[in-house]
Image 1 (spheres, rainbow, N blue to C red):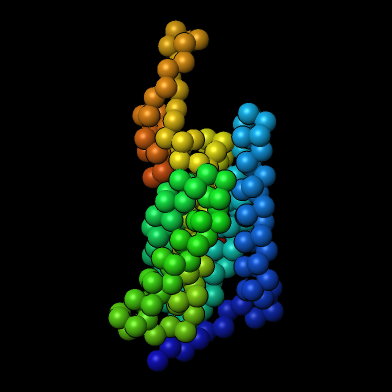
Image 2: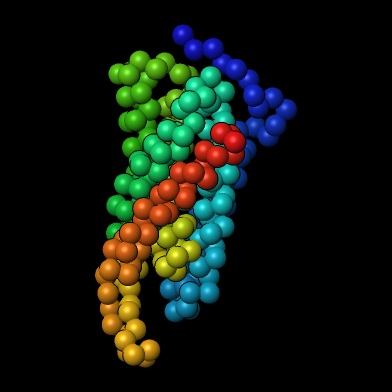
Length: 203
């Protein structure tokens, strides 16, 4: 049996934060796609704004989940959000312009499964668990996608696996090793996002 400890009384309702975070994130991700239309990276900053909007939504989701008294579960909530989110994000990048929408769908499915496992199989029986893990998987996927856009200017698979190395200062040679995925920046984005999503409540 779980006893909810109310810690969000008087604040903005969670559903409003969820809707605002979702809409802002999707809009910013699609605004960043102007990079493709203009053949520049000038609109990459929209990826950063998308990540911030998603993290605000996600940190409030953790606040709701942890109002049931699972204080030590805060860091692990951040890790599970991005552990499930990175799978959805990487799979979604193959769908080019539809990647953000596909990331939402895949993240929701993965989070729903994890929430069911946590409540039904691990017997945690926390009322908000299924919805919270579903939301956090989506948040993880969208945050990683936003950070990917911020770094590379693209959320497509080709953009995340392509980099260039300059030889003698002017000869550009394609190199997978300096790309977002090949260069290990995925791990950096994972850790930055996981810390950012849980820190506001954990601090």
